[in-house]
Image (cartoon, rainbow over all chains, first blue to last red; front, side, top):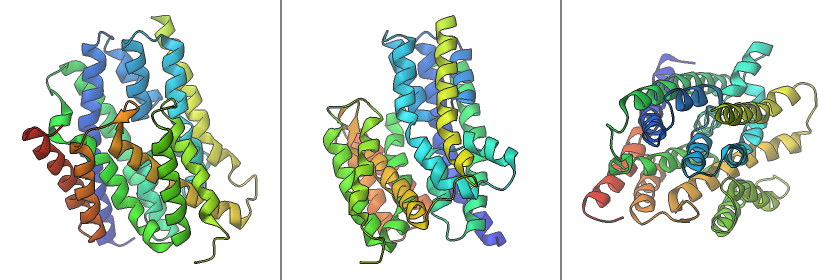
Length: 222
Length: 104
């Protein structure tokens, strides 16, 4: 990997780290101001390490839904990480330790960063650089937010909720441009996911989207 | 509080198990090229579904206009091959400005 590529990778990742750090702060703050002790969001972020599942689980807890419902909601949201882990399995690295550690770093953003790279070496570098950075920043942010309480205010004011879908747009666009089979599948999948969203529990819509792969066809360029 | 500990542990162990599926199967099961291709396509399909539901919905309902409008600004910038930084900041800024002028 050339120095310029490395710089670009860190620069692009840093933006996602920054945004995730702010969301992490808000997660810590929401959990603590909702009445949970500081260690709950902090430990959860270290061992679960999945933003949307953490928000949902804490949301269920704070709404009085009970620990079982909280765990089930979070797990349902995280089923997609199984598919992501299959997609990045060959880029984590050869050693057992790399695989065991790398598995914990599998997130939407990290996988998107890795798969957006053109060759295996760069995919591996992108996975580890964006993944380790994200882990550090996310957990630091959650700790800061849990200690600071509601100092940050509503992160919606900064439009952060639009930043994450935009990150994914930028990262998947090359794959969508390149292959009409993927384009068809993704469009159908997104349509299905949106259609079922009002009717099913969180986490299920993106799984339904996988049905879009029926349009992937033989895989030959069409 | 022990119920909360159990919840966090169950969520952590379950999530890690999901994440281990790929690394554990890798090298043990020889996946046909066609399946590998579908896995790559499946990851993109998942990411696009995530961005679509993330841009348009919140808690099972419509997320309001400000967020999808911001994401659309980001998408147009990305389509025109603007730098990544610009795509992300453009999306957030557009949504922030819309909310500042009263668009939900």
